[in-house]
Amino acid sequence: MIDSSEKTKKAKTIWPLFQLWPFLRPYRSRIVAASIALIAAAAATLTLPVAFRYMIDLGFSRNNAEQIDRYFLALFAVALILAAATALRYYLVSWIGERLVADVRSKVYSHVLRQSPVFFESTRIGEVLSRLTTDTTLIQSVIGSSVSIALRNTLLLIGGLTMLLITSLKLSSMILLLIPVVMVPLIIFGRRVRKLSRDSQDRIADSSAVAQEVLNAVATVQAFGQQQHETDRFDASVTDSFTTALRRITNRAALTAMVIMLVFGAVVLVLWIGAHAVLEGRMTAGELGQFLLYAVFTAGAVGALSESWGELQRAAGATERLTELLAVESQLPVEQPMAKPGADGNIQFSGLSFSYPSRPGVPVLKNINLNIRQGETVALVGPSGAGKTTIFQLLLRFYDPQQGAVEVGSVDLKHCEPDAVREQFALVPQEAVIFADSAMENIRYGRAAASDAEVIDAAQHAAAADFLRAQPEGFNTFLGERGVRLSGGQKQRIAIARAMLKDAPVVLLDEATSALDAESEQLVQQALEELTENRTTLVIAHRLATVREADRIVVLDGGKIVAEGTHEELMQQQGLYARLAKLQFRDG
Image (cartoon, rainbow, N blue to C red; front, side, top):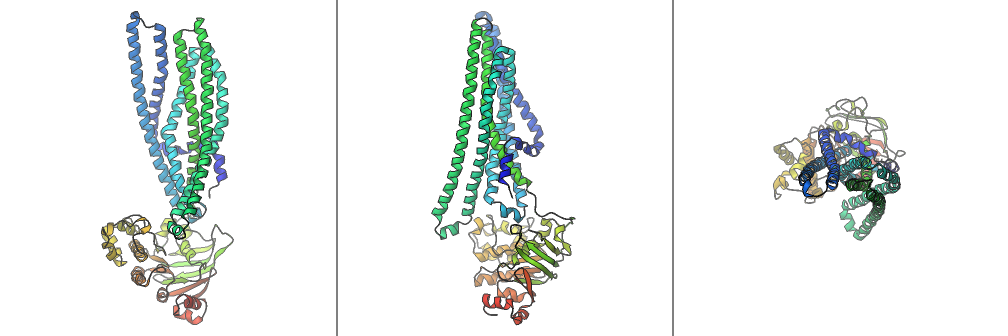
């Protein structure tokens, strides 16, 4: 879970930006080249006032025409260097910014995908998406532009101050005395802008989360006529985001105006004194012109740095939000790691007790002991909340039990990486997940390296090939967002084809036919029989046909196993199973 109070505390400096260095390290050569170009551009800029000084002091007369030509040629050469260095710096820095953001997005996305369900219980998807989009875009803008501008203006500030001191120590001393007058409001307003910047990012994330939630349930929203209510709720979130952003903009505008006013006010004061020094013969006009240009460079650098500072602070907050995601550790540590569980299909639950991390005081499973032999079909039945789905989640190692062990092939799953565990299972969920892709790629999701022929063969065995061939583009037909172009039965058969293609030793069926009509159920049931043949199968049972064909039925109630046996044996006991059968199937 992400602690927002900790986020705000960390965001008070720009140091979080240095956490991006591991992503920048592979591109050190480009960073060095960009730095050289940056220094060359700054040096060329700082050379210009010197040339102007000598031209002014030399005077514009026919006797000096040859020297003036040389100075103008030198100025043009400096301009060429400045143009080339600036273009090269822009290209390299922009490239680094784009590459950095691509790498950060990939790293964060990959890391989030590997989190356990505990993470998603406490983190909204809209929040994650906001960090992947808004925050990374902000970082790209800063790394690809603001950092370069800040470094350039830092060089101009240092170089300009140095040349000011060389040109006139007295006038420069006055400017140095006035610098604290500029820095104090920069620090005070900067802290306020930093806090408001973080608040603004959080409000944007809130509105994204609202939109994500509602759009994922748009059919329900429309069915209950809640469009206006959800529009009002989103508008309130957006307005809150706008209000926070407006406060940030107002403070940044005030900061920029104050800094510019103070800086240029100080410059005007110093130049007024310098003008009197020229009139009194203590400075040449060229020296005053040179001092003026360096003062303008220095003032401009300070003004630009004040703006860049605000951007750097926002990027620091965004960087921290992303690194917080990367810092989240998996809730599934591997104890004494082994390669992977055994592939013989034998499953054993020993003294298993479990509570969900979000509800630690509420036991879902209590002292479960169950052995499932290779090739056996076992149905799990019981009322809602009995713990059936939880057993599947523990098998897939989405969670680890607080007590007891789950073994597959005589190997405790706590000793195996989650990915290695899940290779042993093929899941057909109650609601088939269809991705916004072609039918071919949706089935291939079961095994990415499968050939087209293997995909088509799996679809044939799952009774899905005929309706897919009838699609406008056959297996290459785009199925729409969440498979909106398919019926429930068609989706389920694609899910079964996906599981067949995976060819895992254990099949998990989570009420795979519960939401289907009679005709679709018959087709899907035939496909399931094909899938489960010669495989260890666990079924969360809802349909009587599935229950009757199981080798064994395990009845769960209140997190405990209360009965085991075949359909006939359990019906004779007249216990919970018999009551459920009469209620659910009405022919028991």
